[in-house]
Length: 467
Image (cartoon, rainbow, N blue to C red; front, side):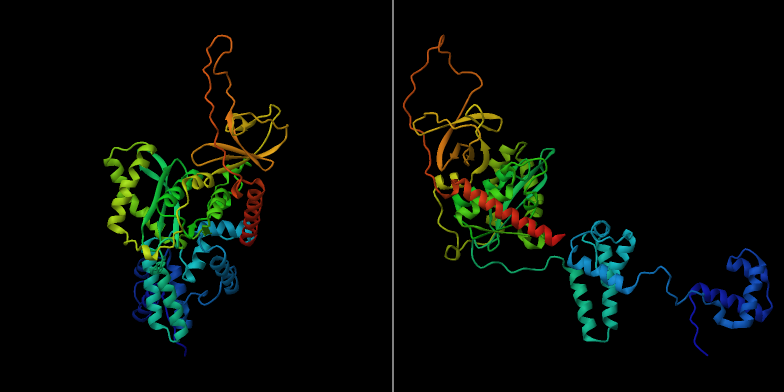
């Protein structure tokens, strides 16, 4: 005779009916105890007990697989999709991607149940959820019989305990600089973007700059601070946010393509760039913003700072104090920063390049103003309608233009004349030679267009891999 196991509810029902039959007890009392609606149900249970015994009280669907249950093969497919392609998505996002990209339609609770069975938690899982799963895994690990099963369970426990594995520091100062921007209410009541760069070897915060949004101007300013104070770093690590905004919606302007402009400037100075959307790729800068939210915000408030200009003036003193307390000492013998370039070269390299076309008035429109090219002695140079050119806005905001492998300065054409030839005394203009830099490699339109084309092709390949 096979052993019959009952649930608590089934066991209570069995023992009540058994006692009722053996003692010929009161059926009404048994009905109330079991919370049944009629005596007829008690009679049915008595009849079943007399014919089948204890086995009668086992639910009929026990051990049966539901008709609409998901197969193990299908669950394995869901696990593979998540771990290989959608590993950084929440359960809700993953469910949406399954419907949109994989033509698999499941509910969020179904997806969550499948992944939890595989010991995979959402990136936004709460601590109590992680604690419960860890407790369950530890219990299973103690019962595991094979070494392979123990190793698998231990790997799952480690993944839950530490989502940010400890990473070794780089050996050399300037070998790896992690950079990013954090949009937060740093001061006042408006959100601003704090751009920052930190050296991986020493934890030294190399530069910081506030701007209204995460912009090219913000990244250029922290690069400028690094170049003028330390020199040319070997590698920048940043995220992919600006890469996927290569062509912003509704604009074809080159100056909006932050990554292309910044990467082009880095390529001219010899700094490499690596990008990834995974936070663990650049953990020190991610942790730095967490520290700054605890330490910088009170400092700005106590200093009564309310504007971006005031905040940027305050940052150098704060960084000196922060680095003296938390950063490791800089060992100059282990520095791989290249020699600091001249201020002139930095100014010309950290430029915003923009394609333009000469209009019917022999002028160039840039930022809602009209300009005309002039040579080194201030003589206007006129080009025909439709002539292609490249406007260069240097870091110090001075404007130049390259046309047909020649470079000119840009002179603004005012809407209204400054002096009247008939009524005003026009002062004699002093002969002043206009500074125009030499036509070096970064200024050539063809080289920039070639670089931008490579970046676009690289982006398209990455998007194909993702899709």
